[in-house]
Image (cartoon, rainbow, N blue to C red; front, side):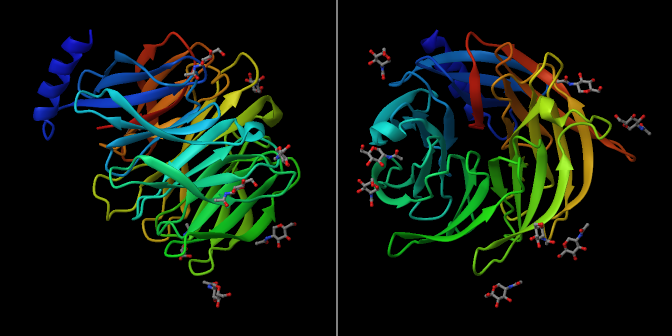
Length: 375
Ligand SMILES: *[C@@H]1O[C@H](CO)[C@@H](O)[C@H](O)[C@H]1NC(C)=O
Ligand SMILES: *[C@@H]1O[C@H](CO)[C@@H](O)[C@H](O)[C@H]1NC(C)=O
Ligand SMILES: *[C@@H]1O[C@H](CO)[C@@H](O)[C@H](O)[C@H]1NC(C)=O
Ligand SMILES: *[C@@H]1O[C@H](CO)[C@@H](O)[C@H](O)[C@H]1NC(C)=O
Ligand SMILES: *[C@@H]1O[C@H](CO)[C@@H](O)[C@H](O)[C@H]1NC(C)=O
Ligand SMILES: *[C@@H]1O[C@H](CO)[C@@H](O)[C@H](O)[C@H]1NC(C)=O
Ligand SMILES: *[C@@H]1O[C@H](CO)[C@@H](O)[C@H](O)[C@H]1NC(C)=O
Ligand SMILES: *[C@@H]1O[C@H](CO)[C@@H](O)[C@H](O)[C@H]1NC(C)=O
């Protein structure tokens, strides 16, 4: 299986500029595997091509570095790094350990700017997140600073400012958003702001627009997308108190859903701004979860319209993380733990409206957590 895969992969990679074949990796809430998947954007097929054994019993969040040479994994008790081989295998390199009472590694993100520090958060009450250095190859070295909160905090998601000089933390348990400054020459991280969210919001995940003026937060409990403005020099946030529902506006049962993810589409050229902001929410019942997308102002990055709110093909279960493709702003992956699958969705527009559909589906043996696009 692996030998055959290697040949196919190298052949596809050689024709990269014209190929319609793309590769994703997915982590899992339990089990010692990371899945490698192949998506064909012409045939709209999605297939499991490799079940890679890793050095951990779960991989609740995975993230690539900017060069896509390393995969960072949130594993029980550790943040781990794996180098990605040309055959899309993973070679374990190193890890940074978490304290025993803060071991629920839940989120990890790598700075796209030198020195490419990596930030990881455990989802445990009162625990700090870690700032971790990397070596020249991108392997994790050691924790060089704690990102500290208070004893009410349980941070579920992190995001970095465009220059990686500020760290934003979505504090789900403490119902707040935190801002920390990161001075790169001195490697010092300091608290700048703790901003309480409205009662019953529970910030889960957060995304900073590349223009640096707007920060978007998914409120898990109230099932909304919240808009914060950001001061580019101080990093401080102001809650505009403007929110969008992640479920159809006619629904009054927002407490039957749990907001999940917020992510920008990825323009092919790095200098271009993202066109879309994509969010997901899970259903707590047996009816579907939802995905929604917003159009963004290309300069400021504020929302100009909500494009669609569409039911997903499962409830979402524990997680339905959306993951925008790196090759096209019109594609994003979703995970779903209600019946263990990953889908690739395609956004389609005509003159009057924009919609999306589940274009490709693959069933998996266990519950996928989040996917990242390798090509
Ligand atoms: C996975 O869990 C089992 C049972 O708790 C343990 O023996 C094993 O060491 C764990 N493996 C890793 C890689 O953490
Ligand atoms: C973790 O355990 C240590 C040692 O018992 C304790 O000092 C610390 O406060 C604990 N941290 C948290 C976040 O509970
Ligand atoms: C982070 O906090 C832990 C627990 O308080 C402490 O043991 C460790 O030395 C700190 N790390 C750094 C880099 O300051
Ligand atoms: C950002 O904060 C600084 C310092 O408080 C202030 O002088 C500046 O006017 C703020 N910028 C905006 C756009 O509000
Ligand atoms: C948002 O609401 C809070 C709490 O009511 C209020 O203090 C704050 O001024 C409001 N923000 C704006 C931008 O109106
Ligand atoms: C929420 O309400 C809508 C409209 O009545 C209904 O279709 C949907 O199934 C409900 N969702 C859940 C999770 O119960
Ligand atoms: C977006 O923000 C810019 C800059 O603040 C503003 O000029 C523009 O009117 C805003 N657009 C919308 C749709 O809010
Ligand atoms: C545009 O797309 C929408 C949603 O997919 C559809 O309902 C509508 O009929 C389409 N309009 C045209 C002019 O094709």
